[in-house]
Image (cartoon, rainbow, N blue to C red):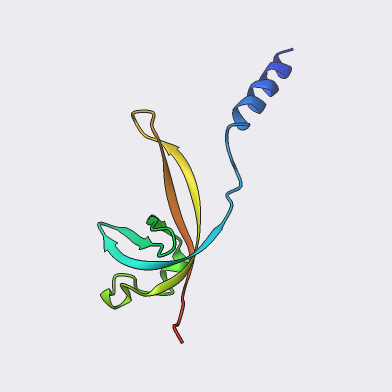
Length: 105
């Protein structure tokens, strides 16, 4: 009986968690680095992307602190994770997984 209740509780709790994160790829413009956050924007829908986390392999591809990259177009692959702050308000953390400079021809 206790085992059944424990399994039911575990199933209930894990149904709210997402263990697999879908990777999203977008073409966006680099806007710069400010206080450890990498900012990009979309020319299509005017969205702003703020990446506070960047995977090590992606961070080695380009020196995003170089101001010469501002205004350049990149293909960026990222994941999102929804967290809850101390006021119980949800917010998203974007993790930059891969980045490729798109050369204009």
